Image 1 (cartoon, protein in one colour):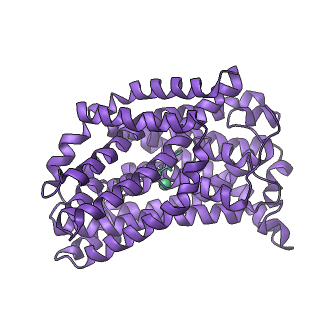
Image 2 (cartoon, helix red, strand yellow):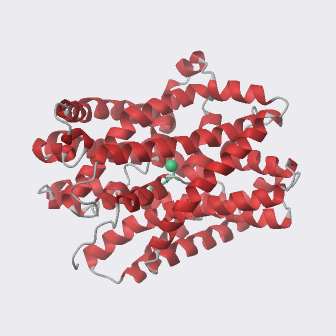
Length: 438
Ligand code: PHE
Ligand code: NA
């Protein structure tokens, strides 16, 4: 490989990372997981997972990436621990499997764009979801979404998408705030807020075995952690970027988008009596399409919303395809466009299974098994294997390192990564396996 590029600006890096983080995980998966796991009981655990486990884990991936300047697999050998490359490989595998069902849900978004134009979902939000979410229509739309993703990665024009992120994030925020405001005026919305925001600790206690793994999986998924994606992005970072500050921006922005999606979805669900119905993976789509069916100019607002959502999904799916592709390119020296097409095609074929109604199954496997395993190894590696001085370079160029007297924070972080993160993830994994696979 030639001279390695670096991000032209700190902002460029943050936008790429935010582009990867903000996606269907925020607007589709978060409301769906929250709705199916007891509402606020889930939300509480999720927020702990994001800030206490996700945030320190993002720092690990950034440190490994910046220090090694390699993709997620080579990073481990570059740092001198060749027998740990499997840890990166698990992440690459997770990207590949995730892409297969992510693209199916991306296909749903395409169908909703079409539905906005034709008016297909107006007044029949749940019937429409049923007709596009599985079967032939779903496969066709999945093929189209994957083709777009492949074209972007193969064409090396991902920068264009990342630039689009700068417009997309504010657009999503404005649209969600507008929908949330409208939702608050609906009769019956109060029940939605209650379900979303006031935790029933009885529900939590009774369902700890399913809430914890779902919340932790959602936290990793939504922050793009455990995939090696953030390792790869940080490999282009310059020495003097502040990793803690960058991580904080990414985590907070991502959380705001998810919370807003909840504020839009739950009052609408409650107002249409759909809160108790088992909408599952359709939760967000049914609620939002229901809203567009009632809003003045709803078709146009719906069209804009789903187009923006498509961009958000694409800026995530390209990073999902990028991870396995760049590994194959580096490892076997095959042309990048060919690799992107090949990897994307195989992922498409695997995605035919979720397109027949098994999105939930794939989702659970990634959330409960793949991501916790990947994060566990990354944390063990950072905490116990790589020499502590290397990992403490977190402080380098960072707010933490440059303010005298704040070095203890770096030490706290290191011990957090050594002890708390692995224990939390092992518990998650245990609960996830027993709850879902026995
Ligand atoms: N974080 C993305 C989302 O919330 C999903 C994703 C995971 C994208 C990993 C890229 C890599 O939609
Ligand atoms: Na996200």
